[in-house]
Amino acid sequence: MVYMANDSTSPLPSQDNINAMEAAQRASGTRILVMLDEPGDGNSRLLDIQHDTNLDQSQIISDTVDDNGEVIGSSGEVNTGNSTTLANFVKFSTSHWPADRYVLILWGHGAGWDGLCLDGIDILTLIELKEGLVDARSTLGRSLDMIAVDACVEATIETLYQMRSCADYFVAAQTNIPYQGLPYYQILTALEQDPGQNLATFGGAIVEEYIAWSAVNSQNSATLAVFDLTKVTAVTNALVGLSEQGLRYDSIFHSSIHTAMADSEYYDAEWTFDLGDFLVQLSASDVPLEMKTLAADAFLAYSKMVTRFDKFDHPDPFDGIRVTNASGAIIYAPSTSPFDVRYLDLDLAATNWDEFAKSARLVAQTNDSEPGPVINYSDTDSDGRMDQVTLVWSDAYPTVSVWVFRYSPHGMTHVRTYESDTSSVTVSGIAGELVVSASATVNGSAVSYSVLSITLHGTSTIEVQLLMDGTAVSEGYDVRVVSTNLADYAEVSNGKFYARLTVPTQAAVGQLVQIEVLNDDGQTVSTTHVFVPDTYTTLEIAIFPEDTRPQADFNVLLLFSILPGLFVLAFSIMLYVDFKKKQRTA
Image (cartoon, rainbow, N blue to C red; front, side, top):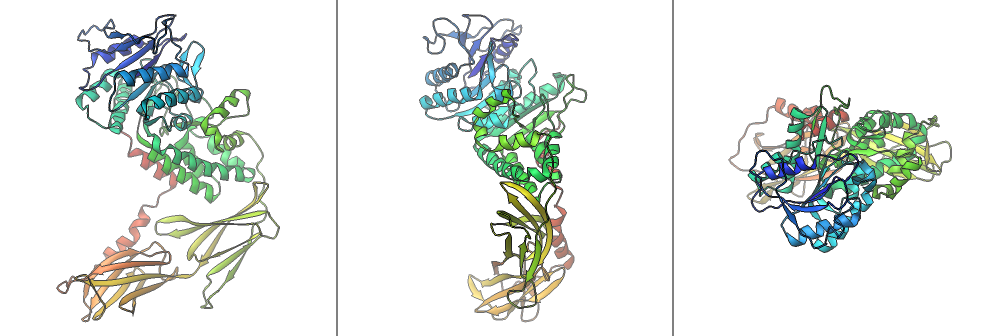
């Protein structure tokens, strides 16, 4: 279903696009219906696309459909900027030509979060777009399978969130689409070659054909992405968490937050920037550790939503726009201007993103941090090792927060969050080399922030059960734990072996250690590896009487021990690599 909105003061080559559709051999079991609204009055029509063998392709030969007024009234004119027109077109198409899968193409001019499919000066807003599709869904009984947009800058988080219940997949560009539009001949030919392909594959074919066409024909850069709309909510939820901390920390980290947003790659308009690049910029800036963590969470959710992305970064674009750091979708940081009041009507504005964005884009003062807490260690079990710490602020604050991170061979990970209204927080039950992000808040704004390094001790237990032919055994065997700085035997109790490791003295949580099973002769009969748990883990090992495998080479163990650390990269590099997997070199 092609919703072709061309009744504007800047008409697009609708006839060329329709001719390209006609030129392609139609895939078996498919149908293409076009609602065409050209400049002028009384000339709107519905077309059932037919294959045109005429290579000249100077005329539209497809059949005009008589809709009996279901879509185009007696005036012969529709308003593509009206939600009812869209709903009627989808209802008519799906009821008269039922199919297993439905793809809607929105064709025309696009204005990002402000709308698309212009008719004169009337634009189909995102609110109206959703209204029309929800109306159509009530008749169809389900959402569409895919919505593809042949219009500029509609791969916005605002659009995706607005469309989250209207289709399964969404295909759009975060940059301008060239005057010629999408290459319909190539796209439909790819469909004809494999009409049974799934929606994600078909979306990928649209991306591939468009970027390949752009690399040869376009004077400008190009981007296109396929989005899994079932994963949009996870992205916005992550943005909500990030925005909450951003609003909280804006008072003492405004400069860093503002700079990260201002420096993010944008294309057609300032403060409409690539979301992925913003998350990279924010994670690399001087912001609290919890904001870096939430930026990572948001990016991981975002990368799962973008199922296919490709770009053509023109080395010398005519419009001067490069897409070096493009990742798939853009997002707008609204201001307090009257123009942006309309932004408040969007579904995304029901979250706290707009408040965070408004605050971040302002040029405002960054306040100094007030003094942080003092550290008081405790040995709660009197074993001579500190296993608890209390952080105490000298001033009385209504809210204090502590985010605890732990260093491990896999990098630094978030372990636990504490919040208190007593100006003190006690951290216990967490062992290792820890980094504590401590802050105090007054009236919702952070006034104090500190990063503290502490070490807490504890015990990590690995329970090992030996099995021979499915039966538990322990007599005649020993279990030994080996790592780069440890070689110790496990204790036996009630037929099981217990390796109790002191953290972080003997081992670090997340460290890979080798578990060896030895017989009475001291020969190693079984070897396996396990990561040191936070507190406790169980492990079953099957052994065989005839198994006399030699002890593992310690150099191999060393390699396994350090291997996870080799993959610990800077966050920005991780993001780059993650997206490169989804990109094809143009």
